[in-house]
Image 1 (cartoon, rainbow, N blue to C red):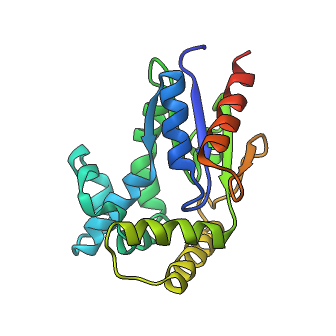
Image 2 (cartoon, rainbow, N blue to C red):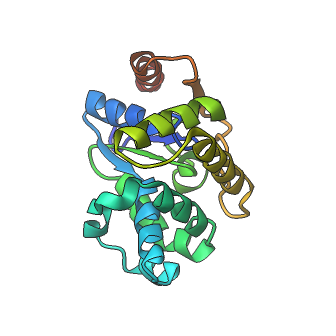
Amino acid sequence: MMSPFTVAIDGPAAAGKGTISKAVAAHFDLAHLDTGLLYRAVGARMLQGEDPIAAAESLMAADLENPDLRTAAVAQSASKVAVIPEVRAALLDFQRAFARRSGGAVLDGRDIGTVICPQAEVKLFVTASPVVRAQRRFAELEERGFDTDFDTVLADVKSRDDRDMTRADAPLRPAEDAVTIDTSELSIGEAVAQAIAAVTARCD
């Protein structure tokens, strides 16, 4: 595998891109960055009353360790701050530097293959139907003890999709040369296998 080597993995919430990204990174011994955590960290600080642009410009590694970053409220806040051009600009250099680090890297998010790393050696777009993604997110929230219901989670998923896909700056969409993996009816193992095969094909 050449170095640096970037694998860009994009897709909507709860499609499985995080799980796939971690598995691909482990399989090929690459560094991994969940770029959504950057926006969740900014969103969490906004919920605490901070200006989102100032929060993005002063983001620290410790902010990514906040245990509340996976809550539904922070997810919605992250989607809101992600439409702010100044926030995206503040986080851009960090992501690009990580992507081209020695030894290679896997980044997952919503605009990795289209904006952050358009020259990535491999681009994947991981998706699934809104109902399937809502079912996954609902089960995850229930397991973690959050008090919610499926209809609310489904509405949140659709709302976030609409916001992510229609924002003026870096909307969620597959790169023209991305390999699409629909996980709606795939097991985790099957989805990971397809991703690894796509990366392997590019390495040959």
